[in-house]
Image: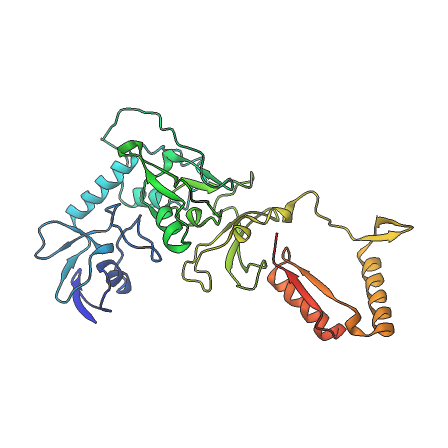
Length: 347
């Protein structure tokens, strides 16, 4: 353990902790934008600058080790001005389209600008037209002008998923998030989940909803046995997108595959069957639930009586919820009496 003082408070932190980690563990807030717990710190946004006694210039708390005897100040007029300047530089070419931006109401940049009282930007830059290639995944829409080049998406793609298909390309104001030649994207949406602004958005569903409009329902992905935790954003009884905001939730810690992140269009698809079909005279016709269930129960019972329970088998669907699939296998094992049950964890 190391002992240091932060804003006059004695703090003990595990050896190897950064100043930011020590401060947050002690309940002392330090603003961040490029930092994320599961990613390596790079100190690029400069929002977490703090003053350390004995060091002439402020340092970034996210990548500065906490050491014994350090005396740290996280709030001062000088630091507040530096943070405001950092935000103003980010806003030089950032479009102020918050009313129509998908991220409105849950944007880290928007929150920081409000918190620090930035109501005007004195800095200017000559106008230019940024040309960027098509984004690496067809499931994700890229808004290059909204990007603040925090690097979260690049680090997440490389460090969390081990893919590394995107990079910060170009120089200066012409910089953008672009593809790495020869590296194929797996469309997992990791970059989308960690973007703090509206630079990357869900490109699958046309229906959108603000954070206060949609109900976020936590559930377990039903596609395979890993048990990834996710949130369905539900509006008017339909899923408008999937989010993962709890990066501490096991077993996936905010990560998903392409199926868990984007494979839910079938829920509201017009081709989805919503009425039971029963075969009569060789043709499938619509039937009521009672008629359909009575028919299935009668056929199950007849087959079981004549051939035994193992003559029946159940095949569960990856397009059902985890809870539904649990009940399905329980029904076959406990009610019908057979272990002939399987599951297709595919789209």
